[in-house]
Length: 109
Length: 115
Image (tube, rainbow over all chains, first blue to last red; front, side):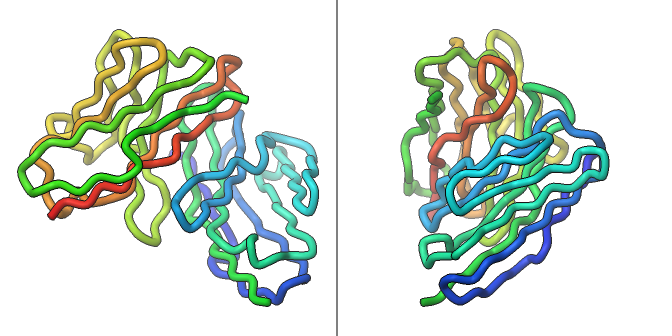
């Protein structure tokens, strides 16, 4: 099956710093989503981005489908950005997402 | 936007009892729903695919007789953990694809603790 690798596994930042999270995948995908899992376990959908670039406030994401990777950018990080960020992909539309192992982000004030 | 509602949010039960978790798609229909399990400090692992009107398909290593899935309508799928044991304690999350079959929407999850 498809492999999803996220890096780095852990990231510690000071408030106000910028960061880039990476997601590599081993096959062509029809769906790619980035999530933030909060301390209560809830998955917050950040981006649906099988290709191209999107921005939402301090967050932006880019997926280069031909090279099989996606990047999540967090600018001016805040303590509320702390948590686990997951990249998940699906080969076909409407099928289950396969999750990477996540990046655990800790932002301190 | 589309919402997936999951209940209960948390449940504590005694070993040997059964627990039912509900997953509802609000304001949209879902012929397919997905059930995931997440152990502490790990990623989400797909357990099974729930299909409306037909049998669920299970991932390798998931016991279909232990994790009963019913998808009786276009908006409701249920996962029943039968004869739960402490090793079944985990976070269970359901999801459903949008009607355009683009992105997946996720429920808020159920934390199951088996004593």
